[in-house]
Image 1: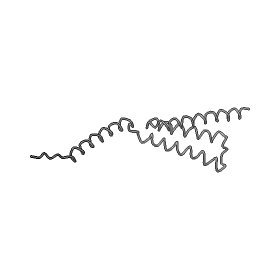
Image 2: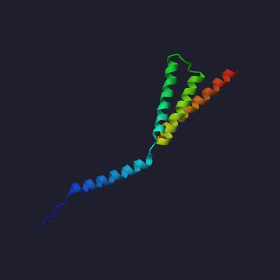
Image 3: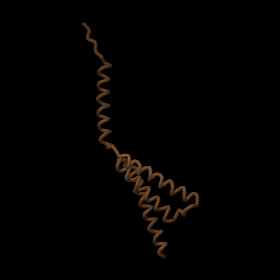
Image 4: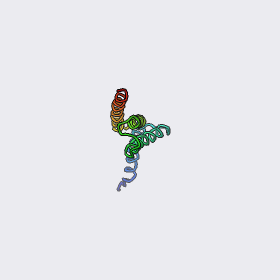
Length: 114
C-alpha cells in the first residue's frame, strides 16, 4: 500500500499563510492615508518644482523670499505626507530641506532689515 501525498496542496497552504502574514504586517506598517493628505503631498511637490522653475527661468531670485518660502512650504507639505505614510527617509530629507529654507529665509529677512 502506498500513501500518496498532495505536495501541491501543502505548498499552496504554506504560501497562502505566508502571504496573509505579510499582508497583515504591511497593513499595520502603512495605515491608510486620506486623499486630502495625498493632495497636500502633490501640492508640496508642485510648490518645490515651481520654486525651481521660477528661479531657473529668472522670474524670481534664487536667494530671495519667494524662492525660499516656496521651498519651505513644499517641504512642510511633503514632510507631512511622508510622516503619515511613514516614509522616514523622505521625512528626514524634507526636514533638512525645510531647515535650509528657514535659515535662508532668516538671512533674507536680515538682509532686508539692513
